[in-house]
Image 1 (cartoon, rainbow, N blue to C red):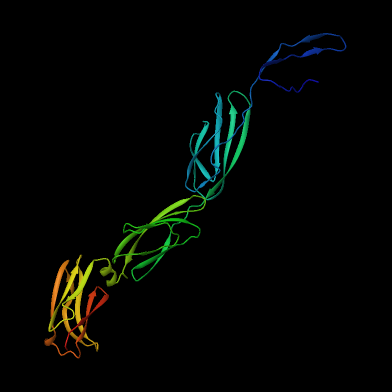
Image 2 (image 1 turned 90 degrees about the vertical axis):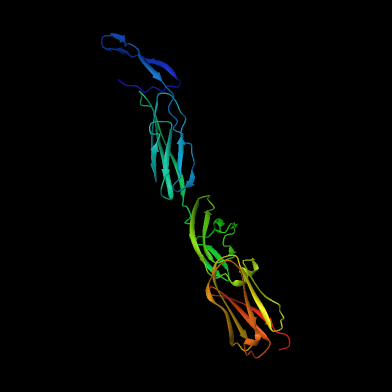
Length: 297
């Protein structure tokens, strides 16, 4: 025939010659040799991560060689650098299944190979959480299940529980930060201001922020109410008898500076029904009571 198929089983240089003859005359001749260069076919192997998180930027590579041209593509991602080289950088934007494509060709020839790599693009958590507070404690609950959590409560304390309950020493605004991570290792961070309003006076007292005493107690005739606070806040002080009747306001609710403040109480100035009194301390919208006993009433 006028054409043949040649299988080349080695690398290097080979040649092809044609013997052409005329059957009726017996005339024949050999062609000049056609020199053929046999080169190694590209392999188009893609290396790189096959599972990652959305918004990740990742490198993918192949075996580098001279006289090669590499064309990269991505479905579900964007090739941001490395086009034409043996390593490309791809940004992944959308969770789901993505693909990396490579066309590996030898310059100056028709030798080429094609490869595809499937990539799982895992979603990041939202790290959104809700709060519920009561009696100076706040319970924090993430909006997504199965998260590994690291909490920073804004007062120097932290926790690794999924849904922790944290107690604050005083009312105020605290910036709470959640570092959340999924089982696939994808993470996110959010911060939210929590306005703490349910810390009772007893917590102030327990933490040493307020000292509230009377001396002497029991007393004869008179006693002194001593109040020490470590911070400026609104404070009021009243005395009731055991029937619940207000018999004296020692201090109208007002902003009181940090320090020690003393308020004398003389029982003879009031017509109390018994020798037992309740001193009511008001701090903000919280109350604390102290029993005051007069001897011989």
